[in-house]
Image 1 (cartoon, rainbow, N blue to C red):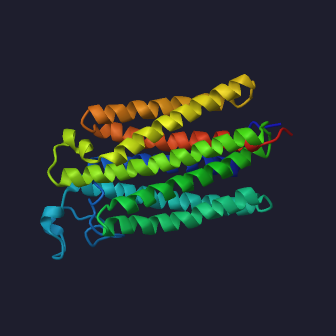
Image 2: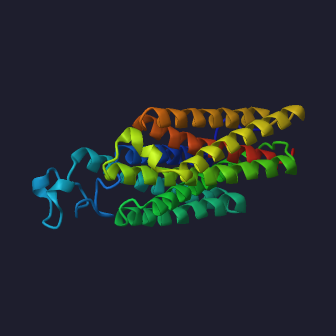
Length: 302
């Protein structure tokens, strides 16, 4: 029987996972607004732990032309939120040790998330040092996705320890393939964004920047349709089997459709920044929904 009240670990795990998703959203805002180098150094911002009030307060090694208070504070808030998420993940790992030390699926998953968040912070510094090079931005995003997947896993296990869900190996295998394809597609998307920023920095007009990407953009789009077809096929298969997982498969399918729709808005609306933020956020939510579906499919009825 599922308890009516959540345990302290369940509450903390839910808050931590939700805050990590919010951090990914804010990261998308930083990317879309061009604030990635709003603080040109790391971990400090213009040589200080607290951002300077004006260009007149900059240390001599910084060019005043780099100072943009809006971009600076956008990036700085992103960093503060990253620290907050790190502390929440640390607290979740401590809570897992206190309450679930004999459940390795919960304990070691949260510990892995905590170790990865330290690595993610270091990667954030490398992103700044390499001036938003596409390959390291991609790595930064992939690690963030892995962290939130680990948190989802631990959170799911904390709830599933009280109630099982029926599933079969075939369902789990098909969903795992869908997750892998979606992650590859997200990685291509980050590469596309990197090429667009290079074009914009070179003086290409915003409405013409996407056309400079070429084959990489076509691969990104093709994989989006592969994900959509995979989600639709999985949904139809589960419907034919009258599976208890059908509701989650509809969530995955809806998110895949919304993701393609936002991608079309970006392509035909001159890379609208709001659409960029939504596109990245939906990608992370889609992977999360796929992960929950995979976890549910692995559970055996108890």
